[in-house]
Amino acid sequence: MFDELSFLFNNTSSLNQREINKMVYRSLQIFSKRQMENFCFQKMSPNLIGRMVSIDGIKHLEKALQNGMGAILLTAH
Image (cartoon, rainbow, N blue to C red; front, side, top):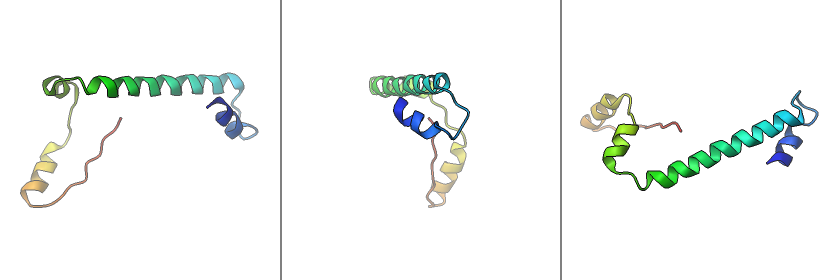
């Protein structure tokens, strides 16, 4: 990842090697966290997941389904 970012930002931005190192480190932190979440999520009970996850605008989905319509759901991670 370091080589790729160094190539991308070489001569095109003001990022130095230290800033690129920080980007790589942060990216690996985020990736590792997501992997752990995926692993742990499989082991969680539906009740625990329900306490950790919130759904905004569920009434819009329910209304669309009641009217025989579909809906597009978006999720952020």
